[in-house]
Length: 116
Image (tube, rainbow, N blue to C red; front, side, top):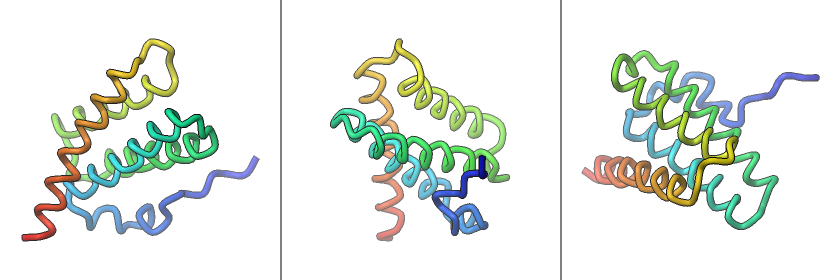
């Protein structure tokens, strides 16, 4: 079995650390939203690809030195909820809605910061 290549190769090569924490969370949120949307539409291949990309971004973010202490714990808690949504049977639609809402605020804040 050959190793997986990163879906976000340029980000994995170090560009991820050049993004602000808000931008990082906004990007994660985009993949989380894509996974949820693909799941709701029954598009299994797209869902699996989005899940893999989201987990990759969660892991790149957690490995960023700027994410220490409570910030890293919150990030890893969001990752845990994301995994619970797709890999267990006890997560419901409310969990998907909560994750979407959580990441939406980061996308809005990143967009506002970029326009300033």
